Length: 81
Length: 339
Image (cartoon, rainbow over all chains, first blue to last red):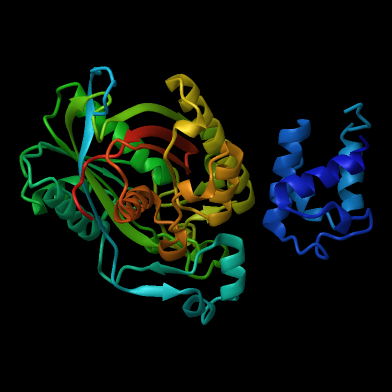
């Protein structure tokens, strides 16, 4: 599973975003996600991957691609699962 | 007690319940007249539609006395020799507010003191008042959770002014056995002072006494890092509930109703989802009251009472707030008669 796939999974599981609505270029604004949804996304990432995303980092995320890049910068990579 | 339940050890049991909220209702549109906010923003971020706000001159003890009197009445006005008031908005910094409440309720001679655990105050209060009763230090206790949060919230701060409301709720606590209707326990309580700055009133205490500067800087008002509190609250309540259920040898399916501190509908949803509890078993009234701090759990219990809960039903209470402080407890629904 790529980091992108895992981000899509969190968006779907935690925030009810249908996977087909998401591409790397999709912005959180287009998905109608607000600042608390980004906090919920950060919490989901922490619970699922053990990776801490600070509130400031979460606030700076504009697109799904941003979230993937941030998680990759924290050492998250492709998994077998 | 249900058939087949073992006769339990002596414990504290809830015997009466009462609440009070100020008559004045403030809607989101009312707030939007003086703050840069909107009904849509407040509803989507918090689930709050309105809150009750104390009229000028009304103090925490005024609401606490009304709730206390209603709780005593629902327990057939028994003798009470301990009054515990959970509040973070006492009438005055000194003395404690509980003695005033006790005297005005005609309970003058017993012990009376305040507990400050902010939004966890009611759960902490159950542990304190229940402990007094089950240990024999007191025969019967009145626990009141009451706050007039609108006095300590900065009316010019749109991030906090929209969240809070005023209210009070009380329970009468007597002695009984584990497994009885109304039985309180076990508990999971905790705190973390390292994160005390996430939710605090910076000035007016011994660290920074009130002076012209603290007032000019509005440091006598509540400050909150909302996003971090959101994260901590969700994770904290979920972990606390899971620990409590594990210690009690129970599964979430053994819980009939979840009564979580009513801070924000989205926190309630996040906690309920993570615990795996069906939505119809979660109590939510934050839409009508906002966050009433120590009063939120008894106000939610009163809603549950109006819905007609079966005595003996297993209720999971959980709360999280400034301190940080958190706590969870299992309660068997008391036989309170008709709503």
